Length: 175
Image (cartoon, rainbow, N blue to C red):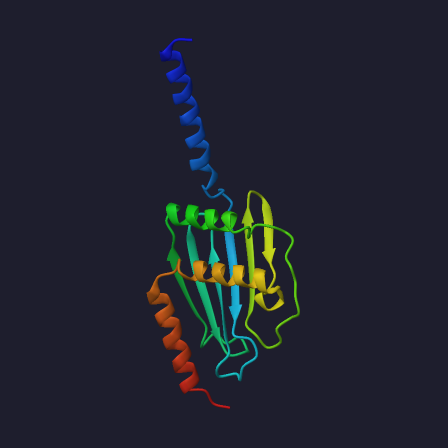
């Protein structure tokens, strides 16, 4: 073979390989995520929960509820938006950390600890991660890191507002 032909073959192989690897971390068009978190067993004035939802188009919302009982007067919902690159990075993170699986190592439940749930849909499949309070230590650490990754996708101003609302709820709580 001529040197030109060999060079062309290597070039085409290189282009094929990089195209495949670049697209492997692209998020599927149906990818969505719902993450729930709650404080666990605490007195009512200190208890709160929130849900982060991210749609396939990158639009998301955070729904915060202080206390144990649903109350529209104290409920707060806000929206945010993720870029395509952020969605790709999130999907890559989920894949690289083996979070899109159906089998989890369950341990002795942590009574009274924070509760979570994570449901991700990707490529037509739904993946559910049990609560961190039910996972064995290795999977718990993996999920705690994933929680931080998900939370860090939202602007800091949202977390500042959530903290301010919780402080106000605690200060105004009447038993």
